[in-house]
Image (cartoon, rainbow, N blue to C red; front, top):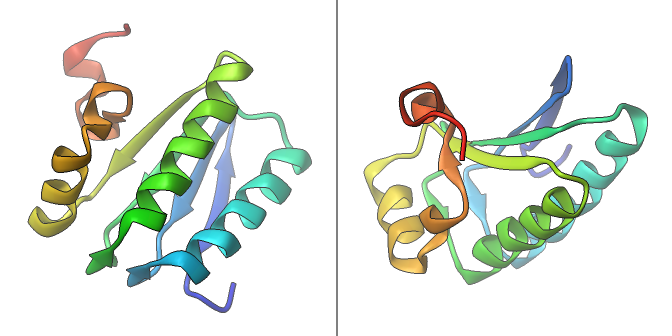
Length: 112
């Protein structure tokens, strides 16, 4: 995609590789891209990979919450991974970790 986001499906896991900046514009594109990717193949887990992300605003949090609601409605889960200290702090302040877990720690925590 033009904003730097790309998607990969492995089994029933959809990986969304986040762009450098997650703002209103990129959030709308990600929402559409994730919807299209989910239509192509059924997924039970959605993983947002923040390895390249330097900035995220409230539109990004809203997009994450929206995808969480969609995945929860079908019995799926949403995860984040590769969060920089800055992005991790934004996620912590938003309270998102109460509903979305870290992909790399999911085996340690067990299933909910």
